[in-house]
Image 1 (cartoon, one colour):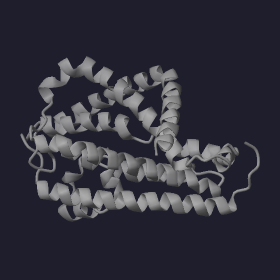
Image 2 (spheres, one colour):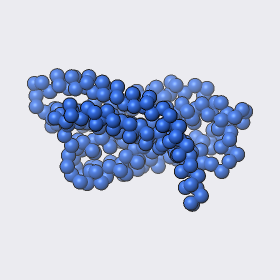
Image 3 (cartoon, helix red, strand yellow):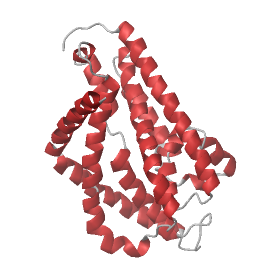
Length: 270
C-alpha cells in the first residue's frame, strides 16, 4: 500500500512541476475570468433593478453564487483532460502503461489533481485583488455544517468531473475524433450544471429532474451548498447520496470503457 501511494505521489509531483511551468497562463486565465463577472454583475444588476428578491434570493446572494462558481471551476473543473487522454491513445503513448504496473486511471487522476491544485491556488490571486471592490456585493451563509460537508462534496464533484472527461477520452478507442462529443457535453454541462444561471430559477419539476443527472453535481451542487441556495440539511444529505451513486456509476463506466477499448487497441508507436 505504501509503495502504491509513493508511486502516485511521484506522479502527482511530476504533474505539479509540469503545471507550474504554465502558471502564468493559468493566472491570466483566472484574472480574465473576472471580466466575465463584470458582465454578470451588469446583467443581474439590471434584473434586480425593480425587485429586491428573485426566487427568494438577493442580488448579493446571486452574485456570490457566480463568484463561487468561478473559484470552484478552477479548483475541480476538468479543462482538457479528455483531449490529453485522447491524444495518448491515438499517438500510442498509452502503450507504456500496458507494460508497467501503473493504473492508468490513477495516473491520469494524479495529473488532474496536481493541475487543479495549481489552478485552485492561482485563482485566489484575482480573488484577493478584486475583493475590496466586490466585498459589498458578496454574502455567504454562516452555518458550520455547510463547510463541514463541502470537502466530501467537492471530492465527489471532482471525481464526476474527471470521470466524465476520462470516459470521453476513452472514446478514442472507437473514434478518431472526440471533439464533437466533448463540445456537446460542455454545452449540456453549462446548462444543467448551473454555469449559465442558478438552477433554482428553473420550474420545480425541471429542477427536480436535473437533480437526478450527474451534471447537477459537477458544479451547481457544491456551489449551492457553499452559498446557501439549498437550505434544507435533509435535502442536501439526500443529494449527497445521489452524488455518490453517480460517482460509482461513472467510475464503473471508466473501467468498462478501458477494458473494452483495450480489446480494440493496436499497440503501434509510443
